[in-house]
Length: 99
Image (tube, rainbow, N blue to C red; front, side, top):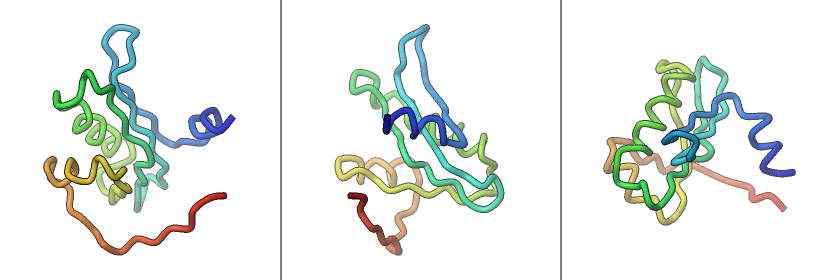
């Protein structure tokens, strides 16, 4: 139910595929004017380090509008990836965890 809701209410979903095989996915929520929150970015382990994540981010931002600020929270194991592709760290983030 959670996954269905996540997909149903996303504003932008971009996928990377080889034929019918899903290699990666990006899911974002945006107002198409000011900000785009890239809430999920995932690339199959077997296909990482091939530029798929970078391409998914670029295409998501293009779909939402390049005039928007693209925002994301990095998973702990991906923290070093984002500076590598040219993104800038921003220390002003607060969260309230869901129950």
